[in-house]
Image 1 (cartoon, rainbow, N blue to C red):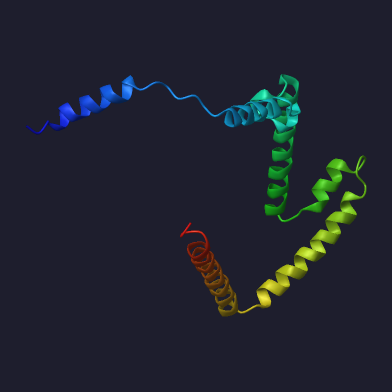
Image 2: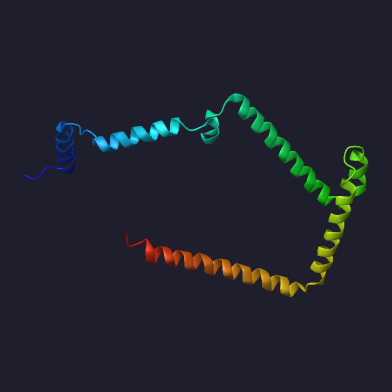
Length: 153
């Protein structure tokens, strides 16, 4: 009589449960222990963020928030038309050189704006299409190279 799938599953389960547990090879055990010790010996800044000291985490979060605020202020300033006069008036006592740097960036921005307006839209669309085609070709070549070199292994 042929056993049912449930009976067969039960028999295999009992047979596998009766086998003794296998011990890991000594070489594997020593390598794992060495890797754990090496990870524990890393300095705190090379470990996970949660393993950092609380003071370092707080300092990192505060500095990250400050950098984000500066980036947002720069974007708002750029979207407001690079009004260097308002910025220079606000910081004229501490940063007298800001007005000079602002003037340089204004000239550079005006130059690139003039160049951008001088390029015909068809050229811009053609350039975007060419970049998209090159990106697709790069992706395709990468996938093909992967299939040829690594897929058979």
